[in-house]
Length: 101
Image (tube, rainbow, N blue to C red; front, side, top):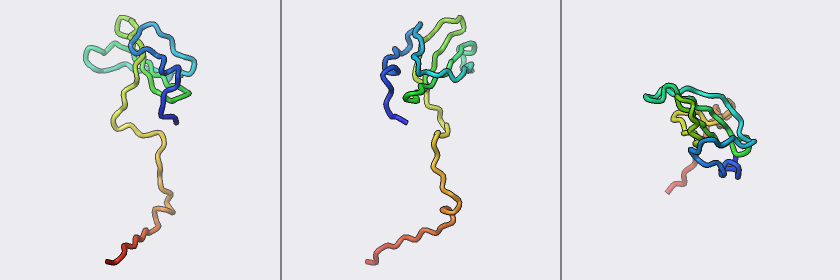
């Protein structure tokens, strides 16, 4: 996974209505926000297949396009790649020697 945005993602003008998604943006569905004054909005979720950047495109309750913005980081979200120790490794005792002195 790259730590940098690809050039098409860098070219997206934030919060500009009427922009089309570039060819690498994959639509991952939509959600309806539950925050006050945003009850009837729609957030379409996109992920770039090239740089894995997460984007949100919001439409307000009257159908007006509010443009793309970067998706917020969710607190408590599980990372995609998790390092787990195998049971055999967990059973090993680790002994550390400290020099006397």
